[in-house]
Image (cartoon, rainbow, N blue to C red):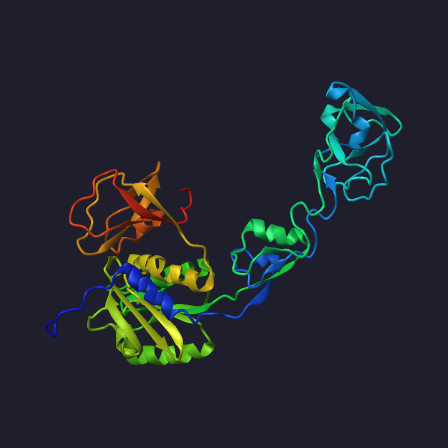
Length: 414
């Protein structure tokens, strides 16, 4: 290899392993949060049931609580006449049920002691709930346990209902609420600093010079990190000035971030400020992927720095390919993006020697490209609800070819 030759580009899966390894010490402390703040968080401790679910025998539907033995006879062909007693509304303790009695019972109400079955009100003659003292005729030979929710049927007190490491979904938060818990121990959120670089960038809303463009990357990365459950301490621009960037970084890491994410300044040009400042503290290389080839990893004062390329779509795709799954692997959060295989809706030409990630739309089970492959085409990326991962190759992929698809959250109206 000549002194001007470049080493081979790193494979995509190898770079993902490198990013994951760089974040291996990312373990923010656990905390306890109200249920209203628990969605999407990761349970830090085993959740042990403090009570039974159901906590008492109760009615599964509106009907009559009975002793099943009182309905026995006639081989199920007749009806049993039972004396109606006082109704049992939900939330109230009933008196015991005597032989030959039927108590009107509402859904969720405790079963009277002695009762072991519920007969739906629709099966009663006369239809409805007669007053106490009346007679109701119910189908004979009711089986014990019919339409009864038994104590502990769902959960027994003292059992582990959710192990540590489970992501808290609406159903799991609902389970905690049903167990009487109003707070849950969750893994802490990582805290990140975000820098975008380039003299050509100005913040949205600021005056723009004739050779400048608005910075989309800070907004993209802030949104991606926050969607991934990472607290963004600050996100903003730094100039193409190595001394200014080094001073800003040294001051900001004292605020205690767990992670620094940069966008831009990682290639081999003359004004690659991130590479100039961090090149001696890490590695900068090319990954065999388009968009997002230039990548970097470094460590400053013990804080990992993930350095992404600067074109907006390159930043967005690099986060999805490398940083988001690395956070999932290390912290258990965010939830992994769904991956599936879908046929191409149109012919697509891949790239020799590089994985190509195209912004795409899923339509009727097939995947159609959203715009071209250029890493500056942000409007096309905004239309996309998926990323199509095309393996390296020289030949055109015809329509119908199955390809791997990374499913993103669909855009509004999508």
